[in-house]
Length: 438
Image 1: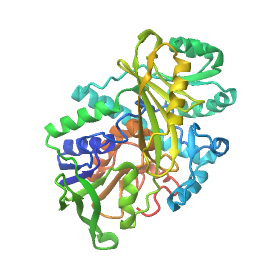
Image 2 (image 1 turned 90 degrees about the vertical axis):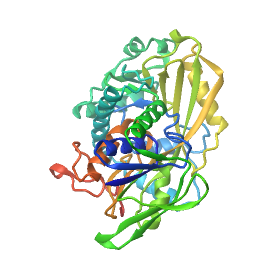
Image 3 (image 1 turned 45 degrees about the vertical axis):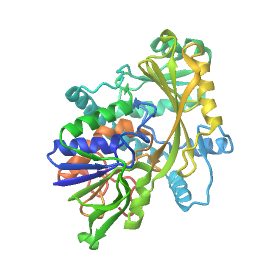
Image 4 (image 1 turned 60 degrees about the vertical axis):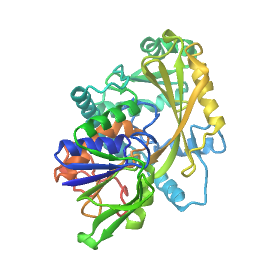
C-alpha cells in the first residue's frame, strides 16, 4: 500500500521507518529542507519515562496563577483573543483533578515505556550515533513542598513498573557530583537509572537517512495546503493532498493512506475536515553551551523542578531546555526567558561552560490538555493521526511510529494505550474528551 506521511520530525520520521519496515511504499512530505528542522531540532533530549506526569495536575492551577505576568515564569500563559486557546485552557483545568491526572499518567507511561524499548531496538539494529547516554535521569528539588508532592507520583510510577526512586539531597550529589555547589539548596530528588538522553536531531536525521536507503521517498521544501476528501460518514476518505512543491508549483499528491504527523500545525489542517484536535502550540526554549570544563559539567541528565528545566550532556555540548509559553504560533525569542535559562545554568554549574556564546532556540510543542497524544484512526477511513505529543515527542517518538505502522497495517499494537478511534484491549477506558470528533 502507498502511504503518505505528513511531517518529518521524530514522529513522522519514525512513522515512515516502521511503515517501510512493514512493507509499505512510503512518501514523506515536509515543508523544511530536511528532517527534524522544527520541534525536533534542539529540545531537551531526555528519554524520560519516569517523569511523564502531565502538566495538568492538581497543583497546576495555583502555579499558573502565581506565574501570571512573570516574563521568566516556567509556564507563561499569554491570554489572546483566540477561541482555541480558551477552549484548550478550560479543558486543561478539567484535566487537573487527581483522578484524571492518575489516568493520564498511566496512558503516558505505557506509551513511553513501549517507545523506549523500541528506541533501544532501533539503535541496536541501525547503529545510529546520537550522543546518547544511558546513565538515567536525576530530578532534583529545591522546595520542600515540591519534593513532598513528588513522593506520591514516584510511588505511582513504581506501581506502574517504572523504577523511580525518591532520594535525599546527599544521594543527589553522589549521583551527580557537578551539583555539589548547590547542595545547600537541594532538599531531595528522585532518580531513574533506566531513563536515557541523546540528541533527537542527530537520531532523527540518521533514521531519515536509513529510511531513504530502505526506499522511503522524502519530498522536502514541500508545503501542505489542504487535504482533499470525498464521501461522507463511514465511506469518507482522503483523495489527495494539495501542496506547493519545491518549485513553487501547486500539485495534488495521492496515496492509499495518509498519516498526519505535523505537530502543532496538525490542528489547522484537520479542522476543515471536521476533525477537532485539541492541540495548542507551547513555545519551548533551549540553550546550547560549549562545555569548557568537562569535570564541572553534569553527565547524568537532570531535571531542575523549581525552574522546569532539563539538562542533558551531548558530547562536548550542554543542552538546557524548558519553560513553556502559550502565545500562538510565534517563534520569536524572548530575551528575558533566554537570559533566565543562562542565569540558572550558570548558578548550577558556574565553571562548566562558555556562557557568553549560547545558541538559543525555540520550538512549538504540540500540547494536548491531558498530555496524551492522538495516535490512531480518524473518521476518514484512510487518514491516521500521530500528533499532539507535547513535551514528550522524543520520548514517545519511536513507539508512536511503530504503533501507527501497526494500525495502518490493520493490526493492534502491543501496548495497552487508548489509541484514537479504536476499541481498547482489556476493556479499559479512553481518556476523557481526548478526541472530540476525530
